[in-house]
Image 1 (tube, one colour):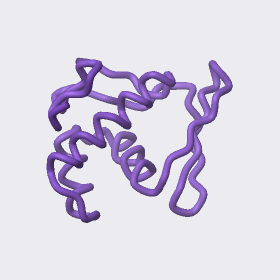
Image 2 (cartoon, one colour):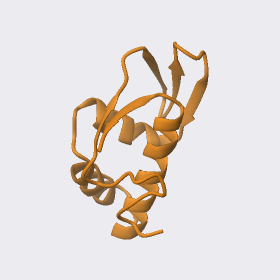
Image 3 (tube, helix red, strand yellow):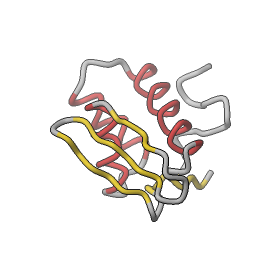
Image 4 (cartoon, helix red, strand yellow):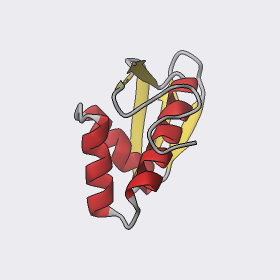
Length: 100
């Protein structure tokens, strides 16, 4: 897998936004998401929580990569790959809307 595409075809050109009906509760640096439609919970570590907050601010995926790289010690390719994997997981759980 390259850092520019996830196995499901998600790329950094996609537009990703939190879905309506998803409850977000931050607990210090971590967070819990609740999909009200399915009743399933999804936990986020501090970096995932930061990404969720940037998504909620309507940041583009390249802007999110830049912000995460500025705040954490991670190289560009790893950051992209990890971001796309997280977004794929969030999409699979029905927590984000993705426009490819």
